Picture (tube, rainbow, N blue to C red):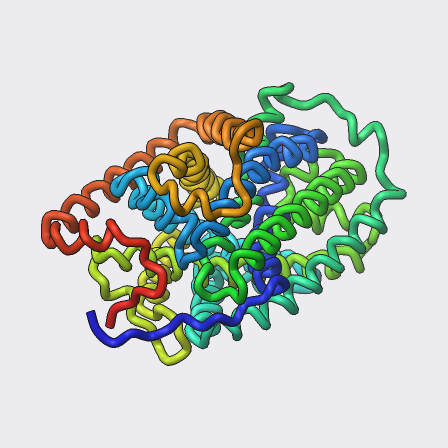
Length: 447
């Protein structure tokens, strides 16, 4: 176990909020809203509100765990392995790793889709090739350190929020009641299916807890950034979806290649197309930027207990686990080449919802498993407040079922592969790994 290197504590509340909300507001808003409208029709904004319920619940549960023990890859891997079980905790992190890489894939493709929607763009960029270039450019940025990532993230985040607010305020006077309250094409079941898809738009909200060793004063910074990071997108999503299907019939909105840009033309004219595409660029790139960083930290966390070798905990001179960054990028390129946006979205939704269920289980098991750490935690979900993880667990399970058999089959295959990786890794160095898993790993790195 050799030379110790440090992750850099560089993130304040704005940084954490921008990374969280920046991941959340991206392809989900500008691409998946249209997919949700295929099922929910003009009630896609209601689907957004339903999808927010499990998201707020898991934010509460994650905040309690983050205040107890802020650590890198905490929500994805460390809390589940130390509280629920070693194997289920590993599968939680394994699934989240694929989930965030899926986000990287979708946002890279979404950027090219919106670029091709620009007026006067006659030569269309191939989506797969262009997406790979986007991934490589932001891979270089992430290689240069968490502070470089946060500076770019803050600029993109502020511009993105201001642009969406302009779209909403400009569009509200043009909303037509007859469009807004058209009959849902599949009834309530369609609204629920829409919510299950739009979970994609919220999936990055808990990932701030995976930056526990790179945040200043993480016991305050992480929860504050997380709640701001989910509250801002919930309001913006609901209002933007309401305006979009209120100015353009839901069927036209749902079938457009760049749906929000199509809605913008209804009240902003040709200027609206360019304006909303530029805002979409900021949203999608801020999402992609943060996702690459988080996927890297999850691979770092999975490697910390040497189940999949300790190699991916190596840090470069900027304090970045660069081999974990390279591995995550390679898997993302595979998904870019092989998967459609909707299928990848449903699979990654399944992985996030699975992790959220495990996170809520942590709340119930923590008092008995680690009573001293639980007693020292100021923010507790106990007594009547246990309704939070109960609602969160049940709502996550319902929306998991709605992902559909194909997405659940692919997700099950990935988890079975993860179980094989876990038991093979454990068999190679059983005593060492069991010893590492018995510890809380704050500040532990290998060279």
